[in-house]
Amino acid sequence: MRKIILWMLFFTLFIWAVLELKNSVDQEELKKQNTIDSLQFKIDSLIHEIDTLQWENQIWDFNLSNNTVHLLSAIILVESSNNDSAYNSYEDAVGCLQIRKCMVNDVNRILRRQKSDLRFSYDDRWLRNKSIKMFDIYCKHYGLTTAEEMARCWNGGPKGMQNEMTANYWKKVKNKINS
Image 1 (cartoon, rainbow, N blue to C red):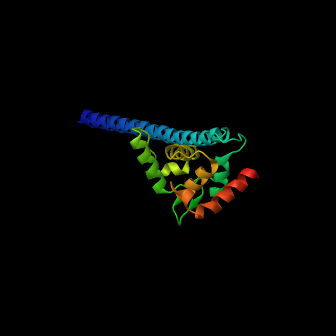
Image 2 (cartoon, helix red, strand yellow; image 1 turned 30 degrees about the vertical axis):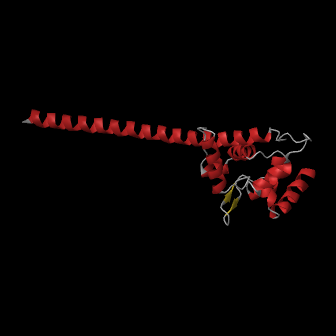
Image 3 (tube, helix red, strand yellow; image 1 turned 120 degrees about the vertical axis):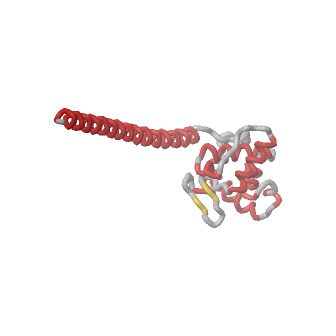
């Protein structure tokens, strides 16, 4: 009888030790996963910083006669005061170029017509590099070649040049270019 009690006690202690070991391993795995998640968040943040820095080092002259003109920089200043986090809740316009959902839809429509696999999400409007890419796709698709065409059509849609309301927008952009 004594042997049975000792074996039961030994077996209970053995099971308890195994469970504690498993619990310890699970806690270590949880710590590792938390560290990985934290590092992934830091990597995502750094990628965003790199995208912003890459944009700041690029020259956006769009074949204008004066290569020192930075049209896109002027548009970004007018749209968002150079703020990637700008948000206009009234229009649901987002990011440095104040892109609305209809613009993302239009750019994705253009890409589908071009049989491109590239697509943009509404969240991409917050990212400067993706906003600039949408701007570029939009301007090229609609054959916008002059600074005024690009600015006015960005503000008023593909027929922006025909809309008198965009003339004031162009004046603001032109003032930023000339300042």
